Amino acid sequence: MTSPTKVAVVTGGARGIGRGCVHALAERGLDIVIVDLLRPEMERTRGEIEAMGRAVMIEEADVADHARAREIAAAVKARFGRCDVLVNNAGRGNPTGILEITEEAFDRTIAVNLKSCFNYIQAFAPLMLEGGGGRIVSMSSLNAHTGGVTSAVSKFSYAAAKAGIIGMTKALAKELGPTIAINAVCPGIIETELGNSLTRTRGAELAKKIALQRVGKPADVAQLVAFLATAEPFFITGQAITIDGFQWEI
Image (cartoon, rainbow, N blue to C red; front, side, top):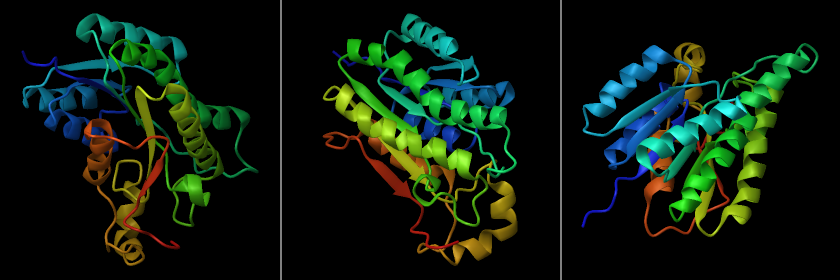
């Protein structure tokens, strides 16, 4: 008797690192749920994954919306009956400094980057527990450790949100273990839509200050996420794993 196909939910899965994660998880045999606001990009990614023979469900949503996360969890349960992997990837930058940022902009940065993780973990953890456990991977940032190096496309509000993800990860590893393992990933400079202006104009310069002599690709991060989501046996939880090619001061 074959085991039921596992299911992964990826927020911000329409493009960039999220799309890379969707591909990496589908390649490992998981069916996929994509949560994003970008309908055309979601449809494109759905077509790519369905061509691989995997089932795909797409849900248009603002990840800062707590009630919407619960609606999506109910829809996933109705269609698939399970959730084995949750990747909290959705996020947004904010380049505004402390003396210029508005309260509304600060709140929005925290809501999209940090509160979204709370929303989707609280919504999907019960379904994971019903199924005997699962894996959660949340996207933090190298900025959570550095506060944002000089090349960073985002400043303190983004760094604060991403640092909060690390604290949440460590606390929930204790709370949700042993059946749910939760880890954070901290990318450095990655060539995505968010960082394209930086990598396009300074890519060669930045690469010289990275030990592996290149900026990262979404697939680099996706392979780490897929490992944390699917590797067996598994003895990793509560960790914040940096993936930056070992970059020093930039």
